[in-house]
Length: 239
Image (cartoon, rainbow, N blue to C red; front, top):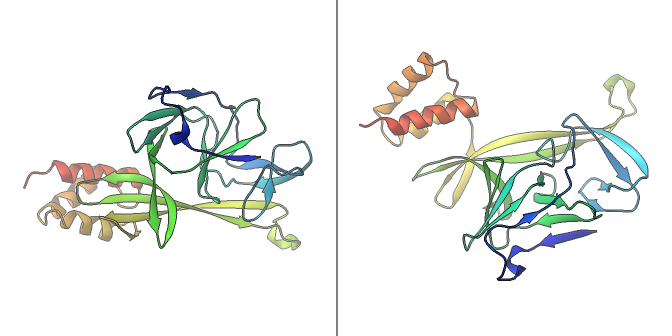
């Protein structure tokens, strides 16, 4: 059975911080077991639940995190804060989900009245993307732009062709980057040309210094953590 958890419906007596004890479920990033039977939830490609029934082995996962044991702070638009200790992002359904220990219920956490989810220090927010609501991770923020990261999952079905060596279902996750200025979000690639153009928009004299800094410190324009270092250094340069 699936529920939508709306934090706005909590009584006023609840303080800014509450703890929901959740099941410490573990999912492998390389394999997981999905069971068919009495349905517990659905994805666009298959039905899944946790009841003992026929098992279907798949490779990969449509969940972002390897494990369900993740520390999460939920910040509401009224700046109230709530804590969860078990949460995951279902990429295929574009929704955060949680399972409470001792129950058979999967809880979907929507963004109504929610400003952001902070999971293990990573910030996730909901934005309009081509007319649909989509969850993005905030990678980098300045006063003029944000770099966001989006997630997609592809379901590769098994094939009877033995040459393909694909005898079970497989989920492939893909990350994509986006640039947000104001309310506008466009696709963005982490490469030298795009990153330097972003830096140039805040000061042309910084570009050569950033190039030298990248070479000196062996930083790549294609790696997220390195790009964050480069952008931090760029902000520290006083023209």
